Image (cartoon, rainbow, N blue to C red; front, top):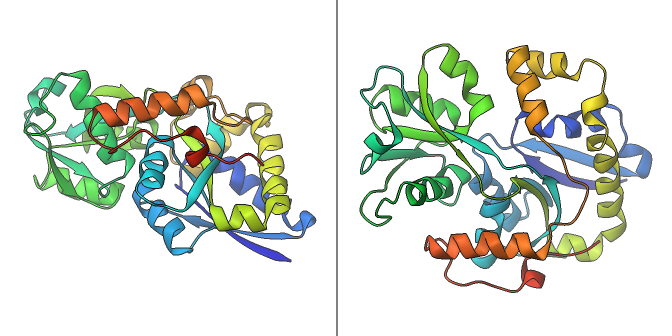
Length: 284
């Protein structure tokens, strides 16, 4: 049996992986798929791909594009979630900040440099016409728990994270959400190390076929809203709203989307150049 290591964030977007693993679907194809949670997010997964700790990652589109251009020996093999990620802009409940404009020049909490929480602060700043060189400051907090500590203790002023995952903290009055910042592109892709793609095309195809079969019918799974609410400590009405907003994909990310992501990252001075579509993607 072939062992394959895969990583992703422990969030409701990835529940389909848990369900297919639980049913032993990969083992039926002779694949021992081992899932690793990365609560630190995209930056940690990029590091794990580079080191060979994982072969595949379910990862934020902008983060993996940036890291491949920076030398990560990986390629995108398909889109996983087609819809944008809705990033909530959060402050501590007791803070004096009332609007996103109040945050200009203050300190953003980020999980690590190169993570989605880092890159999206630039998108948010651009949306509000801030000076990207002088109005952005950062404090590394590693993960959501670190953000709670950082904002509550005043080590950082605001934090961007997926708004449904942080909703319980808003309900508990730990965070206050003062705005949203949707990613201007499909949010998650599946990426794999180049050497893994080259040597394991059949296994990679089998893995994507299994997950695609589940995501294509994900919303039709009986009581899926209750399952998500219980597993991720969410209110049922929030889960239902999230399900209505979210569309998975079973297709390769298209060239126009990849070029648009690069164009925006380049304009934000996050990547040094725009590269060919073939440098970032691989068809199975």
